[in-house]
Image 1 (tube, rainbow, N blue to C red):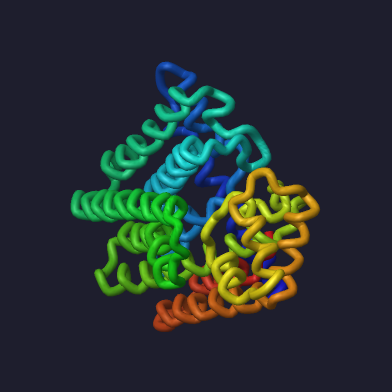
Image 2: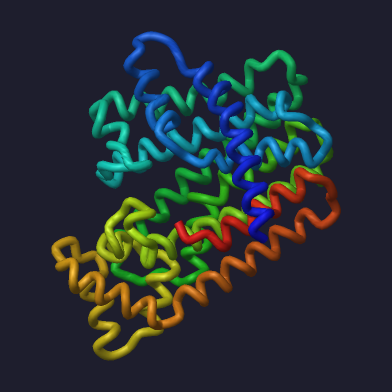
Length: 332
């Protein structure tokens, strides 16, 4: 497993450099400040998981990186568009260890930077003359659908946060399938489409992406509770204090009783809670076996993702499976 992780990291890093170069070449114009703001988060971090999935989904079907680069860049632009607008909606001040886009450039420029990324994503895939017109149309259609789903997922997340009711696990999964998994699924679908392949292959790769996306978000939410703040660059128990209705928190609230439940509920959504009280609530959650439950759930989605690739062979498949293992097992 260690060798697989190293292979995955090396491959992701190698692809990221090519994607970054292509990405930044697309993001220039006047006034320069808008494009500087649009490029800001891209230049300050990000693993480029979605572009990696585009490229490997293309390669698994016999395509190459040149065919996949426009789609890989487009999916990363849309991803960064969502990050910029999410940070504005959530009033977050830090991302990737640096001030958020709107914090550095101001809210009006931040909004425009996100809009530029959104527009450039579609320009990048629709104006590539090297691609057949029907391929470009399929790429645009898939990306547009994903953008709608991300917006729907974000709306569901906001509604859940505002509601006094505790969502069910099913409702939570439905929300993250749209808010998070939609872009993972579309990344894989666009990679397959870039290889100009059959609809069955697009469906298989899309299935891999959506299941990986759910596993990714479940584990990400777990890290938001029990992650090491030195590594995550977020305060301990950040999601608990913010009142985020994530799967680990829902499981903890439903499983706890008596004083333990009171301690967790006292920390939930309590922006003025003391550091000691918050740490105590996190310790209680950690002692309840929530991590095992969450990782078991993530493993179920991981196994479903693996089945989607069962009919394929080659190094690109191995790299996608290596990424899947990393997503499920990661602790930061």
